[in-house]
Image (cartoon, rainbow, N blue to C red):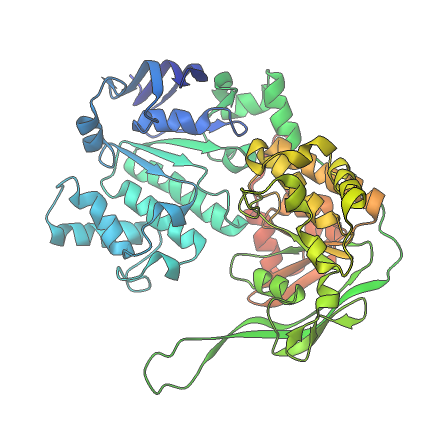
Length: 532
């Protein structure tokens, strides 16, 4: 008998079908990956196992944990099972953690709520599991708060909470989506080590097969709420009998056909830039200290060129981006766009800022949900001295929406009426509408499904042909950067440690840090996916 058995699980919410006869199983000590695009039913399957379905949900079938049917288990009994028998790691650690409680208190809460042991023993267990996930108390005291940790460290705290009572089953829902490649590799190694050490079953939910191809024992592919293919990892990678499975893998290794870059002509010139942040005083009369986020960085971005910027979280990518956009003043060096300084004295040069736009990681979070698309994508018009009005404004909106593969009729809709990929197209339309000289893409595809990501990257190539785009593409996904850039900068601890033509850097990296990043990137070896 398997540890977890799901048989013919059918689920509807308010009469709308969500899951259709889903069947899968997880054995003790086994890693099973559930993959598919957004809306395929992956997360809803996990929530059904946890007993966390919405009030209007109606489920039939069977979900058995060690032979016990969870669908018929009353809520008080499920509360006793959650945390003790089943643990769950959520996608976004900052929303899974309480910002006003210390990490020690939150790990202890999982133990104390089940009356598993006295408080003193619970504190000792919290230290033990935090050490097991790579957060030893001598470096990460139990008194730290979530905001004092990096994204990868927060995710380790969430994992510590989930394994504090050593549950039989651990569910990980997209635990590495927003993490850089080295942190992602560390979290995956940690999860695999916990399975080996505790003998627990792991149900891993992800939209990216490359992430789990090297660690999963079996893969389950879902589409539109149903399982379309399942099998042992190597066999599924080799056979891929269902067309949808083949589509997912083709999208994972999708290569973009970028047009050739024009002859070099400098557009953005960054010269010896330094950016320091003031640190809080440790005592009343202590001297003021600073942390250096950007340390004497210099590079040139030519007109019509596509430049990539990669590096781990905390390396200074975002600080450098804010300086280029004129949002942060630098303490040393200069930044010029088309020969004009981004800052004049201590004030941002608004005439230069008008020539730059940015596309953010979360398209929904970067829009006001109360406004229609026509108002949202014309927000950059406030930068213009004489913005178009009336018919000229409508024509500009229609042109921008058409350029990104939408229709002029979409201008009257609200942002919640679109999918994630469509929202990112709208974000690109907003960036394009005033024809900027430079666009900065800040992790613009990291949260998208592989097929939607491929569509957005193809859209960038089309726009490069139509508009001769110049962009700085910032991402932790090395395969994406390799596909959509001409040159790449590798950033570590506030410095550019390597730069050069993209293919040259990826095939023959010179700096040890670059080699470390490339080695940590997920790969699908059967199909030659990932980076070299």
